Every structure is written in C-alpha cells, then in structure tokens.
Length: 402
Image (tube, rainbow, N blue to C red; front, side, top):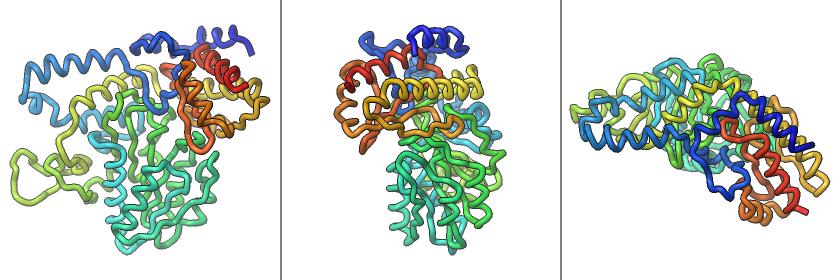
C-alpha cells in the first residue's frame, strides 16, 4: 500500500471538492475520523446562521414566526425526506432530540397495539435506545424481549424471529449498529414484525446521510435519527421523526404541547392534535439549530446519496486493506463486517489497550472514538474524509501501536 495510491484515489474522487465546502480544522490535526459522531461544519451553515441572526431574528424579530419559522420543522422535514430518507412529503418532522423522539414514537406505537405487552430490541443497541425501552417497560408494565447479538455484529432476521411473537407490540432496532457498523436487514425485519402484527421503530442515527434509505417503499412505520453526524447539522442539532402516512392521523404521542395542537395560536382549552405528522411536535422548535441542519441537507442533495454511499464503501474498503497490512500483525482484530454490502460508514478496530491507545492517537492529531470495552471507531464521512487523510491516520495508528 502506497501513499501515491491514496493520492490517486483522491484525484479521481468526484466528491473530493466538497471538502472545501467545510470550515478548516486545526492545522495540527492529522485526520478527523469522527464524522460519524459529529460532522464537520459546512461553510453554508455559518452563512445561514449569520443571516438568521442578523436578518431574520435581528431584522424581522417576532415576525419571523409568521415569515416561516412556524412551518420550518415540517418544511425541512419534507426536504430531508426527499433527499435522504426516501419519504414523500408530510411524514417527517424535526425539532426534538433523538431520545425525545424515540420516547414519543415508542409510546405512540404501543398505544396503537393495545393488549400487546412486549417490546423487542437488541442487547447491544445504542445505550439511549436500551435505556428508553427499559424505562417505558417499567412505566407501562411491559416485558422486554432481548435479541441476543454479538458486540461486533448486529441483529439478524433469524435472531429477531426467535423473539417476535403474538404479544409483540413494537420492534425497535438500529439499522446501522453504532459499535460494529453492521447494517441490519431493514426490509426483511420490518416485514417480519408486520407479519406478527407488530409495529417497527427504526433508529437511523448512523444511516441518515451515509446509506440510501427508502422508508416509504420498505413500509417502515416509525423512524428517528439525529442530524449532527453525516448530515453535519452541528452539535446537538435537532433530530427527525418519520411516521408512515397511514398512521399519521392515528398517532397519539404522550407529550402534548402547544406546537402539536391544531390552531396553535388560538390558545384554546383542551388539546386537539394537529392533522398529520405535525401532531408529533410539543414545544417551540429550535429555529437556530434547524438552520444548521438545512445547510447540511442541501449539501447532501447536491452530492447525491448514491455517490455518498459509493465513496463510503471505497473509504471503508481502503481502511480494511490498511488494517490487514499494518494493524492485524500488531494484534488488532476487526470489529466490523468485512462485506461492504452490510457495513455502514465506519470501521471499528479492536485491541485490549484500545482505551489507552485512543488517548495517544487523539494527542497525536488523529481524532477517533473509543467504544468500550476495546473498540476504536474510524468514522469515515464521505463529504469530508479524504483517502490520503485516512492513509496518514492509519500510519499514526500503526506507529503508535507498536
């Protein structure tokens, strides 16, 4: 493996020019391999935020709500659905954190399956997902059916089939495993849940902006996801929720707030939910945060999800090649699938001293994630990660690990 090969890959990469559309990082940084946790800031986000503060907020003041802020959660939701999620208009809304959306949708799904008392999720799902399931189960007296998975894999169709049954109300899983990057078979698991009479709530945090999605075609019931990873919306930027059109007017979410009420500015007595997906809203939407999301979504639209996925595969394949040549002889194990068809946008490498080594790598200018007990995640964001950048990062890992 040569440095020249990495440079050649950058030279022929149609997405390489997008790197200049992002604000520069610290000059001492060797590589940023953490875009699957926090995407880099688009230059357009800075422009949009400055315009929001100076013109919309500063100039229009309270009139901003009638100028478009009130509709921003659903207008931007429609755009996100079109560009990233494979969802027709009227099914996506933004405005809460992923945790709050997941709580709302799990409660809403359970309410649509009265008499069923089981929630299915996997043992190694993202911690918030597991904690929310445990809390809701305690709150409502439900039973959790755990899918027993390996840490370096993800839930398979067969494993889910073992625990789904006539008392299952909801199946909730992550499409891309946060630890291993394994891609679950979303269409098959969704069909399996439906055949059992259950609903599905998918977590798309590591999918959105990384792999093409077709939520409508796959007949997904509910989905949530964050916008600060591959969508580059900024730290803590508002998450999204998707509700299948056929369910939108049936849903009764548990946090009743004025922004989810029909005729919200009437301030009337009692709670009458708005029509459609807007009824998922509760409080005042975070307009400043949504402005950053808008910039990221438009970059994704310009690049196109097929090209983004193609580069994600190429980057992870390059990382695995370097792993085999440089790191496997040093006692590392691969914590992600070798088959790129079932691998998302990051690669996890494993070694017993990963926690200590992660601190060394960050100090050396390679920003990565440590994930207990022994994983180092290499987050490869197609719009911002270059092949030479990845090559130099793997050199540092090799040299520091010796």
